[in-house]
Length: 347
Length: 184
Image 1 (cartoon, chains in turn blue, red):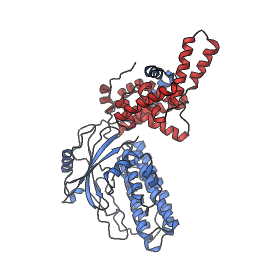
Image 2 (cartoon, chains in turn brown, red):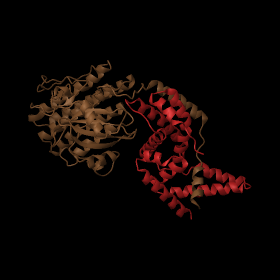
Image 3 (cartoon, chains in turn blue, cyan):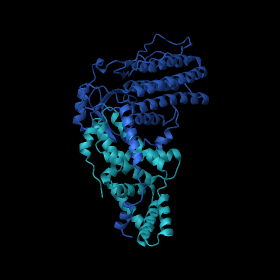
Image 4 (spheres, each protein chain N blue to C red):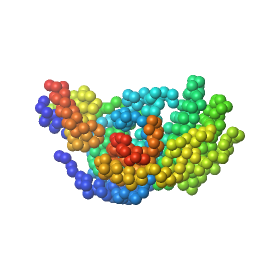
């Protein structure tokens, strides 16, 4: 059979007839859905100072190639799949954390972002429990993992605060409260299993984890009343747990106290660090570097680049299409471009 | 015949959250997407459900801060494809694209309408082509379906699949060659 004939047959393949009644019902349901989930006007022009923190992406000192592979394999495969079962002392653990971050970035829906970050927070606690059951939970590992737990919870709180529609915001906040309540139980178990030397670290984390979601509920005017009191006397209540709701960057120097979770480790504005280049300068550098204009406004954020570099970086990201985009990573002190990353969005 | 939808005119409106314009998109694309989904699924209810979900997903995407669409056709098919993949994964069902109704129809014609021999021949050949298509690799089937059944351009398929236009072109060419071999 000739190619043209085959194509003709394929074009005329039978498919089930469309029911007009279903179309009409679907139209009505869609109208209803749109009424309950309005899209506010998206102005293309860039806001003068938009501190859209790119999901507090923790950039690891990995070559761009590895990052790109991970981003493209977010749905699974190879290293990415293998890393998902790794524990904090495993070689692939940084990949696991990175993939979780990329997944959150790639999801456009804020409610889903909250869910993913809660999922990540739960995973951190499960990892500690697993390490404890294997007798591998050293103080450093527990501290680091609790720190990552706090970061995930903080991100979930931030995303929840960014949700504009009331039903979604309430659902997200309620999900957060439920998650934290359940995490408190897990933290209690972890604390009981932990040696005395670092039980305080776990207890302090319990206090901090309660602080986050309650703030996101305040945003919605439905502050939770079910904050369970912490019975442990070792809790250091003197620590500053008021996390800024607007602009935050991660402090490069972990607090020297008993805990390295980001409590006073958050500062309220990057302008308080005189050596850093401004956001406008970062945008200019990204522009000179050839970052495409894209289909929507660029997003900028300031991060602490963990690992060997140990430095602040600006990230400037575009959206090349509804499917992908690029991010320029710039040294926030010198303005030098570290790398340019590609990312894929999933829906 | 390919139906054209004035994307540029409607895109600006839906990117601004215009509900009326989005309903126009629904009116135009819902039957096309249903055709695509029902071709790839055996269940009519599932096909209707997935088609409906596509539009809700697109609207949710538009509700996100700064989110815009620049190729509606590709975007709709990409979301459809993702939802289909989710459906297969969750239900652990196989992709049954050979719809029973075609074969039932054929049986009826053979039993009761012997005079329409041309029509029967056509149906038999169509069934052969479908069966041959089923023998191709999953990716090849997808490419052929998008290109010839859904009438999508190479560029649109490239955006849906995330592969280069060149690899799409080569993939379709190979798939047709393989189909020809099977049909000999």
